[in-house]
Image (cartoon, rainbow, N blue to C red; front, side, top):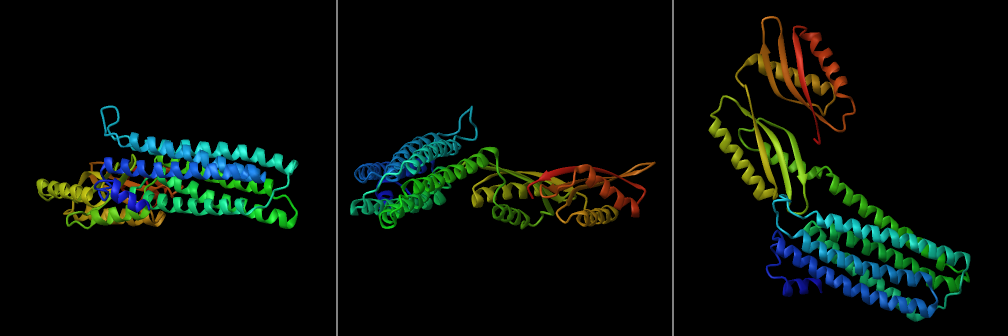
Length: 388
């Protein structure tokens, strides 16, 4: 059904990189979500009153809050589609992340209120009247919510939307929660034990877990989480594949929302080659990365001396020493500066966050090992804490 609506109501629906198209996707999925949740709220709330079930009524209120979440989603897609401006040069895509946090707060508040109502039901249990109406309504709710999960998850992946991802997580949580209510509705009369309040607590736990997960993911996006490893490896492999690239380091990736990814990296080139030729290669890499990965890449070119035999030998030697201290350490920007009284080995060491030793400990270890073989050399090291 959603695919049918998209084909008929979203012009140029395959062009998902266009902000207008993304906003129309968000508008359509949000409106469908509002209508579906209002329908479920009305049906389940009436059923809960008829059979005297607090868990069914609570589940109905949960659907009403989901309708509110869809309204937030509708607004967030509209705001996030605004183009970049003077005050916000990276665009407004993070409105989606903020909106998903608002949805999560609503979910947590609902969960806490449900715990209170369910506890009252445990302390003062009331008999639930079994009826085909309640079982049928809950079964329909499970089917509708699973359908909503499916299309929200699908288009969250297609659009890289944290808002739709949050909506999908909320929907699958509702499937499990409503399933728990359905179980209590069926088993309570059979076992002569009022499971209504207990299942209400189970529902609340599902709801609050969903809210917590959404907030955690949203905070990670706002704080700036590390990019996906597969993405980083693919980007590194692509840049390294160019003839003339001798090494890369200090890769940094910044994400400001869907279609708003920026990156910078240092690329080592032969310092003896024509600078215009190397610069032309750098321009080509930046354009190719934009086309293939949809990110804006800025490359800093690091020329290195490839003709000096001693420098090359010491560069390889220091790299082996660093790798022996920790296999994740890499050496770059290596220079040999000779003087009348002493010689400096000047270089940078990239240190992934997984390496727990302090910079001073790493310096002491490197200096100790180098001094064993070359006491005449002094080390001048810059440590770069990096993601890779």
